[in-house]
View (tube, rainbow over the protein chains, first blue to last red):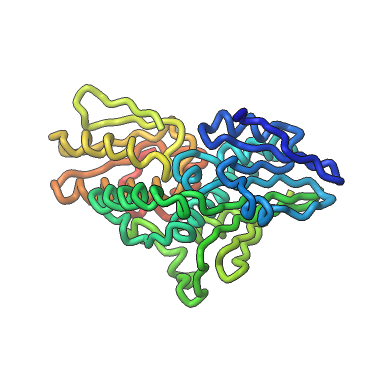
Length: 219
Length: 99
């Protein structure tokens, strides 16, 4: 299938394309300028497609739905933020902040949300290699490999919000590190994500029991 | 991520991006660095444009492995987004960072 395959144009002139899941360059093509919504082709089957019908919005928007497998294999955030920068003016600094924060949110959604992996497995060379072997094993399960990650950017003249949704079970706020723990210098090999989000975003909100994170940026 | 080793295998320059997705490439880099004999291991970051928290974690892992071998790890010339990530995470207190 071609990377750019318009399959729907709805009543508010939104255009949906499919991404073949093969490469970052084909994703860039699928996120070409007139597109408002892009869905990886592996997600399009009866029920999944229906679950993914987004609400039309009046403001500018760009939505991407990908599988966990593709989030693991490709730098999808780099392509997504480049596509965003083609649609709304972003300074170099702002683009860098968005890229940094969304990268953390998407990796978190993939690793801890959809793959239910803990951070402890990434504390040494051998354990990290073993964790990646575990992930490759998990991705042989079609159900896990095709579990959904959605990235949705919505903006107006004042603010840009990026929402990252995963298909996991969420987490309890009690398990989140305290503010002073998040911002301390630490030898831990993981656990910096939230501090990075707070530093690079103007606003961060955890929604839907931890399965959605909303990142706000003033324009 | 791209990388280029010096002849003595104890210094590597990495460029482009260093993220979670680059784990396999970095595993190769780490193995070569740790196989070397020089007291100091140097990772030159001058051409690195982007790093995420997973990349930071992998640098810490190499530092720990170097410690075990009684060698030191120096991070050289972080700039741009990489420098800002170092600032946010206070990485300069965890490493020897040279401008």
